[in-house]
Amino acid sequence: MKLAKLLLLVFLGTCVSAQVPTSGKEVDAVYSDAHALYLDLHEHPELSAHENQTATKLAGRLRSLGYDVTEHVGGTGVVAILKNGPGPTIMLRTELDALPVEEKTGLPYASKVHAKDDAGHDVPVMHACGHDLHMASIVGTAAIMAHSKDTWHGTLMLIGQPAEETISGAKKMLEDGLFQRFPKPDVGVALHVSNAFPAGKVGVGSGDRYANADSVRVTIYGKGGHGSAPHTTIDPIVIAATTILSLQTIVSREVKPGETAVVTVGYVSAGLKNNIIPDQAELGLTIRTFKPEIRKQILAAVARIVKAEAEAGGATREPLIEHYESTDAVYNEPALAQRLRGPLEAALGKENVMDGEPITGSEDYSYFIEQGVPSFYFGLGGAEPRAYAQAKEAGTHLPSNHSSLFAPDVDPALRTGIAAEVAVLRNLLQGSAEELRKSIGGK
Ligand SMILES: [Zn+2]
Ligand SMILES: [Zn+2]
Image (cartoon, rainbow, N blue to C red; front, side, top):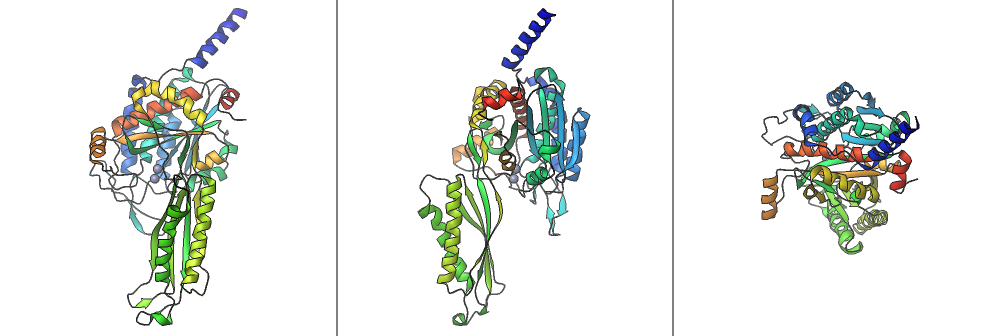
């Protein structure tokens, strides 16, 4: 009895230190199924918060693999749990939604889907951000993890999050009790495909990954009248024009050189006819930052400039400034990024693990981090390697995410996504939850 106990302890000790690397054979075994799902999802995309068929497909696959699946979490959200003894709880997240973009890739499986958006307009729909690849990858990963329960222990929590593109799905899942109805994870993991790297590679970095994003709407109030008699009016279009130019001095003149900050006026809306001076003008801004103090500085500068330009233009009423949407930066726990680099190198080859740079895009994955879930968010290469090399040589850019031409090089990107996710999960699903939390400096 005593000897058996001792042997068991030795065995468990070995399990903790020696991670089973993802083998090419394991990925091969699940690839054709994951690839078929990818083609299906790509051809049948759905808009944010309307991912009904998508969620059903994902839930069905995960259920058939033995996961305990709950649907309709925060709208169309899916939560799939696989328990495998004591140990940490690790969450892996994929998004479900596509975009109102007309696909122009010319691929045989290109989307021809049209749908009604929330405003009732008929719009084309395309998986132009690669969330279809993330879903296919998570299903491949789910299969490998379900078939190799001797290589890990703990609780695996896979989530399919709706409405990432409208920065609302993560919040909705949390409001629907994601971390109360289901276990709160010790660590969260997510990936995103892009053309920043060639397919076959991943990008890893620590600290800030995605920026704080703030959406601001400005309404400037003038006094309309005849285009031939500007002296009887207060022209909000001229005030809007000077405001736009002055806003561009915030980053160039007020923010310390070297700090990351973006102020973009993405739309200007005013007037209907050339000989009418309108009553008001509207500007739509997006502001991107990493540091909270820079974020505060910029938002204050926007308000100051908008008010001062309106006053300088003789506006009779103070402009309306609405901060209508925001999301925080996605932050990679440095200890996690450091810990997971090795297993990724072992699974993919050292040359295939690159340094990922922070980007000024935004992601509502940050809502999970805000709940106190230390996280590891990494980049997945999507670019066809030869096209990537040629673009680099020529100093040009391949189509970015959200482009009508965005088309990841599915094989090897999907294989790499699966191999990387399995490597990361197997590494984290070892030892106890306490040990894991301690190793990343948590409570
Ligand atoms: Zn996107
Ligand atoms: Zn995306």
